[in-house]
Image (cartoon, rainbow, N blue to C red; front, side, top):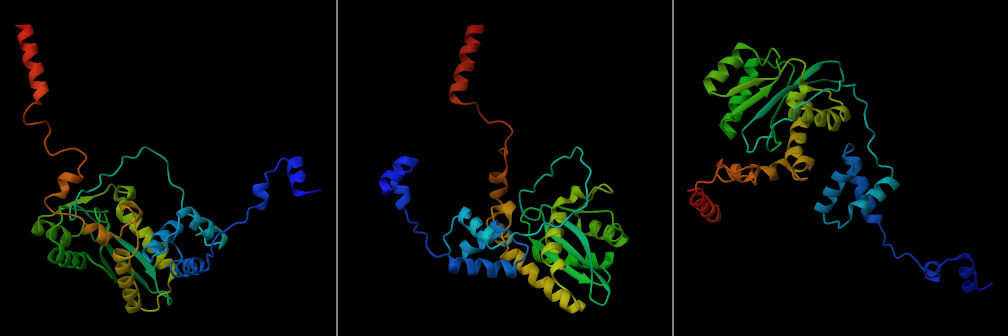
Length: 290
């Protein structure tokens, strides 16, 4: 039976039978995608797409997702604890840098069993990691000293948010807030969602660095944290700021102009003078009523 009669009997179009795919080779794209995924094991296909476009690869996100699935690069989701479901209020997002900082501690241990702690400080507006300090002991005096260093580099914040840890409620921190004239806000006990910006940062830090690295000494941990902080601020795309890096997003702010333009409503609660048509209609109503 000829092809024409076979297609007519089965109901197929002859064009579909003769079509040959012209898909190009994806070898270079696959190799680079696998190399980046091997280097950044906790990055999904969306962040890989941003990094590949930075390197000049013009690829659609759907095509990249297909290759991502074929190479079996899916990130395995780590199990988390169950959380209670209740009424939650959304957090207010700061509109400019240095409007609100968040602080928290993260703990880890070295290969010999010794434990160390890390002080993380994040700007809630730009998502920049301002400090990532590691030591075997971090007291309130050490926290105040790190804050003084940041004040000298970036200026004074309007508010600082933290939990009710003993380091943050110590006399050293209380004396520092009075001397620096900075408002310090403590979240409610047992409510870490009230400090969601630093909690999200801690999750990224633990998932992408702490769970992937074995630390043999404190100096090695400090060097790894410094490299990761630099990469987080200058190279890692952040989903909540349009896949920009925190440093690139911070460079778009103008201290005087941006707060008004980024606000949802204008600075004035009502217009200073009525619109021309509105004033005319008001005069006509007054004449009619008179």
